[in-house]
Length: 73
Image 1 (cartoon, helix red, strand yellow):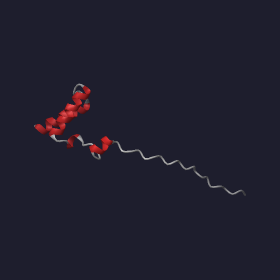
Image 2: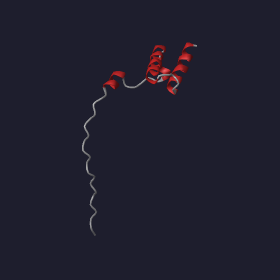
Image 3: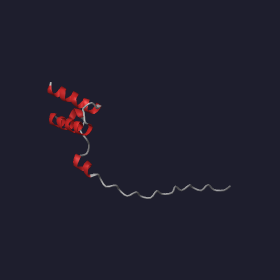
Image 4: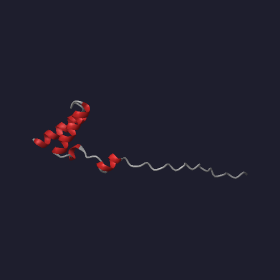
C-alpha cells in the first residue's frame, strides 16, 4: 500500500510591517465616543463638520447637536 505524503503548505512571504500613520499616533489609541466628549470638544467637532460638509444635516452632526443640547439643558 502506498504511503500518504503529508501535504506541505507553501509558506507565505513575510509582509513588511506598515509604519503607523502619524495622525493616528497623535490622536491617541482611539477616537472618543460622542457621549464622552466635553462641551468644548463638541463645539470643535460641530465646527469641523460645518466646515467640511458645508452644513449640519448629516446624521453625525445631528447626534452632536443632540448631545450638546443634553449637556446644556
